[in-house]
Amino acid sequence: MNARRSLRSRLTLLVAAAVALAIAVCAGLCWFVVRSELLRQVERSLDGRPQGVDWIGPYCPGGPRADPPRGPGEPGEATGRRLPLRFPPTQLVYAGGGRCVVGPTPVRVTPADLALAHGPPGGRAFRNGVTDGGEEVRVLTRNVRPGVAVMESRSLEEVHATLAALAWILAGVTALGVLGAAYAGLLVSRTALRPVGRLTEAVEYVARTGDLDTRIPVEGTDEIARLGVSFNAMTTALAGSRERQRRLIADAGHELRTPLTSLRTNVDLLLRSENAGRPLGAAPKRRLLANLGAQFEEMSTLVGDLLQLSRPEGEHEPHVEVALHDAVEAAVRRARPRAPDTHVEVELGPWYLRGDQAALERAVVNLLDNAVKFSAGRAGPVDVRLRDGELTVRDHGPGIPEEELPYVFDRFWRSSSARSMPGSGLGLAIVARAVRDAGGEVSLENAAGGGVLARVRLPGSPVRSPVTPGP
Image (cartoon, rainbow, N blue to C red; front, side, top):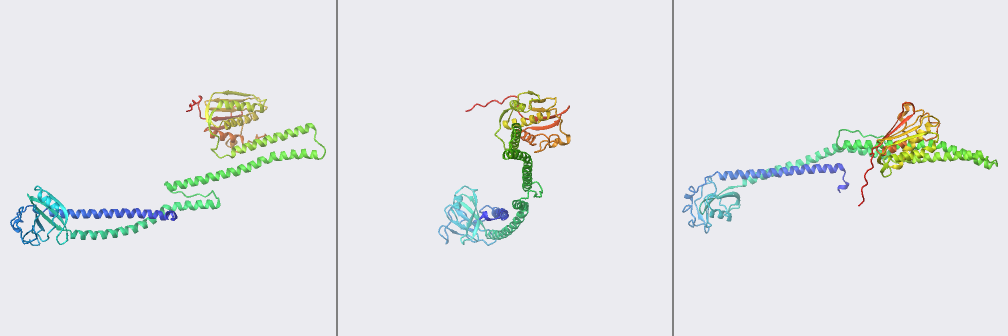
């Protein structure tokens, strides 16, 4: 049943029940406090009367003694002269079991009263009792002499009437409180859940239309406001991811169009020459096949780069301990055959870190490819240094215009001086991603004296971590 109720109705019921319970508890406590105070007032009125029995003596035949003379009353009971109504209801209890009633309302004697009569002088006790006529009274029993106790009583009729009236009043207050609590719960639920309603409408709108530009107005700093901020951040991230995917698809289609067109042209040329019965000579055919191989390699590299960048941020191979100096040395060995005329100077210090070794090696290879590509035909070497976790790769090429430096790590971005060279514009984007995954930073700047200086800073240590022995 609760599962079918709305959150607003459940919150209303919860608030109403909590307030109603609080009012009921307060009303019950109030009733018991008043009852206790009324009984104390009755006890104080009883306790303030004279505590001797001399004034009672004249009204009981033979006076107060352990064995009173038996009169015409009940067996074991002495019949005393009744006091006028202005005197308090009083009676004597004897240890032998008899009583002498000198007040207007005889009270039934209990074993507790007889025990007090048997006890030492000074003993006393309050209790609720009943008269012979069935009326409830408050009784004070005191031992005033050995074997004699005096019982004084006061009717509880007024107390019960007052408590009954108070109970009706408190019941009415509780009923009004429950109604007020229900109304207050409805107001509280409407006010408290209004931001939740806006959030629900926004989520439903996004689910229905796919519009990720929807924003929720955020007011305050409470949990609902934080939820709104999180929702806005989520839609912003989703919108950014969708935009990056759209750009990646568009840029990939643009970049693939050129090698595919070139491949198709060369294959068509080869097929036409064969179909026309005029095959190409050996030298032109070799050049054409070499061109096809280079284009296939370029397209394979582009597809590999696209696959690398298509993975979600933060998704990578499990991190292991990587000797960065070994990864850089392996990358240098892979890069040297691509530019045999370019001298590469290497100075490597030890550095160990946790990361994806293949991704880091690929990142260093991309940096070296850029460096040797722009250093080709120039006098300066490519300098590779690794010191205290900072890897620098410096070429002596034409450099990058200052206004283009902020875009060097964007996907498919290519400098105006590099658009005539082979490449897809994804190499530095892959470098930036691999370095971020390893917790490092990468930057490019124009070096003093010409060329570009790439800096990669990676957290780690010059000493290998101790190997934990197995169990």
